[in-house]
Length: 149
Image (cartoon, rainbow, N blue to C red; front, side):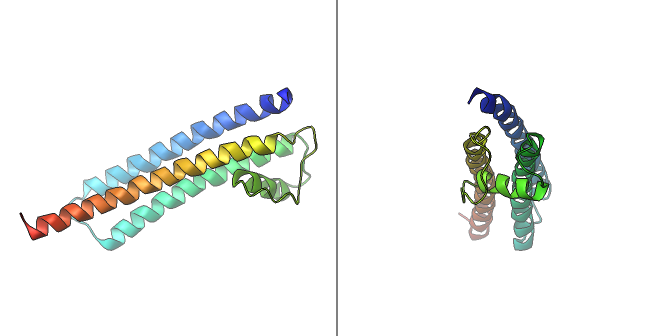
């Protein structure tokens, strides 16, 4: 068990830091782009911005899945990266199919990755929710300005 924690916790910590970087970059660019052109607002711009936020957050999650798969390969758990990536994605998304299992020596890494994944999907969801709420707020403000006091 201690060996699993020594192998998995640094990877989990690295993934947490990486997600923080993705969140920071995503929100910084969102805010900069959204507020640099306050006069120009359109439905298509909002769709584009929200799509970019979603894509960047999913990219961050996919990168983390690949990092866990790389760990599994380094531990000689899988012969092919594609299988390690599939197993990692199942763990990260907390699906837990069980069609591919790791050796008993490293099996505790699965729940560690699942804990990492559920937390990261929660962070991704909160970033997307913040962006959606910002779009709603700006649309409400625009509507109130048109209607007047």
